[in-house]
Image 1 (cartoon, rainbow, N blue to C red):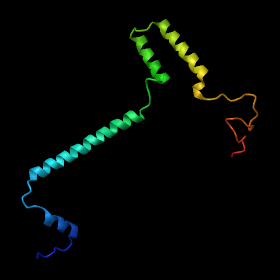
Image 2: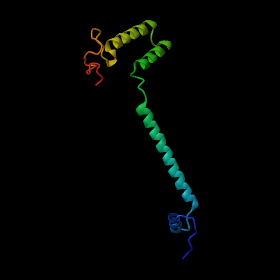
Image 3: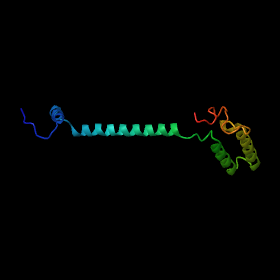
Image 4: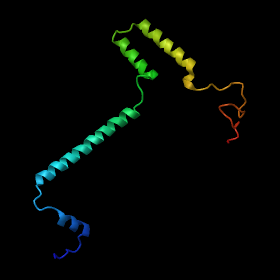
Length: 124
């Protein structure tokens, strides 16, 4: 039986004793490189998914559409009159839609009950 060196964990000694003596170091390096490559590819895939999942929508937002319209006007795909007409139509639609928010009732007293303020200003 071999003497146990002091200061080395028992688990390390057990692992070291169980390792085959004729391990090819190039094989270990190749598998290590493959594992590192797999981790890097996984990280890139996760970053790509997160970027696409949490990216703000540009094509459907009014600002993105206006940027596209300005670009088309500057490149000559739209005339100035067509650009102004589309811009005015979009502004009218956005003004009517209120962006999905209800307008406050100008006749309502402050602190009075309303669907937007069910507590009536009492803080509940």
